[in-house]
Image 1 (cartoon, one colour):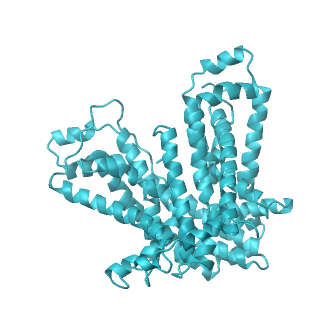
Image 2 (cartoon, one colour):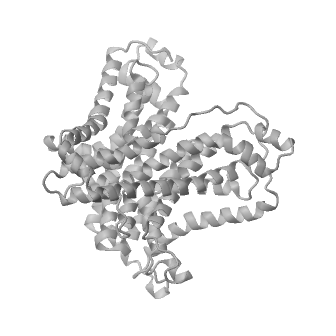
Image 3 (cartoon, helix red, strand yellow):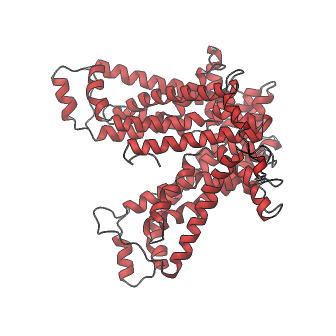
Length: 535
């Protein structure tokens, strides 16, 4: 699409979207940096604090451990289900992506039920003290299971698009399965593994929910929880310290970008029919291992949350301990308000994000500066939610918005508009330019053109973008816990309060609601988009 001058209406739309992106997402980040550099003494003192060094070290350890687990799990699973004849690959492949849509703090709730050293299900079955989730290893395990789909999906996409004749040629030359893996498949996967590993490093370094629920009990402090502690404690120069900590946390996001590997080309195109690599004698054992992994990593945690919501006390599975009393939580005013608040906030944020992301996608290839707008729209998504929340507090406090529900809406739109940009952009790319051109020649302009031509043609993509934003907004915790003001709660903050302070057993009910809603929304998204979107 050739870029050209914009009409007055298009220029106004472009300018409006750019202002929203700048004010909602970019300027608040600059305020964090500005607050840190304008208080150099406090910034230096913060970085020199032994507690900060401990938190930074903990963040690095957690990110490295989590990345290692995600790569060790995700890459082999992608290869097995894409390139081999492992039994059950078609059934297991969609199941393996479920952790991608489940919030990590819900996974943490599940593994607390399974591996609590005092009363976890696993310790009841295999003996007290067999597993202990309250450790750095346990925390990394939970996040690794939550984030391995980043590696799995990225590597699977590369393997599905790479020419399988490369492996077929190696087999015809006499190479065995494992030699093909080492000399052909792994080089094809290497770039995808490294890029997805960098993404896992970023999201695990900035994670808050699971470290707050597990790491705090294990006395394993990381920067995200340390920032929360500082903000809750308040005190003189608190915002200067928090801004300095936020800059340090953002530095962890930059590490994978600085160390980004060189991309290399792979042969693709219309190749011969893909032949599955035979696993031979290892086929059945690997199929059993795959089934066991799905059971342990996906089925057991989900069952732990759901079953625990029916238990009166602890994890006692005796019939007399089953009850429905915890479900009364859903009828309580504070919980019902939290669910309703999250529903309408997520719905409104998804609508606005589709609008902003859709405009950015539309002008990406149609206007000078379009790519800059798209890049700026995507930047908050790569920014730790903790850092973005601190920036929003600093920027919006003078306007009286920081202590209202509207700052949550701003945070959700700024953070997740980029999720809507991709599907809407793909939908726009499928529209024949002759159709809107013909409409313009007939006199259609502005909103009428968008409503009668563009929206009907890309409606499935718009719906996909809407659901992709709605799901994380409904269950969002990291930004919400920092931005909510007294009297306002969301599903994420309500669940956090229940498990941390009020009723850990009843928290499983709300976790079940989140689990059902996000998985159900993903299934609905796949049905509406005919399998094109969703996981």
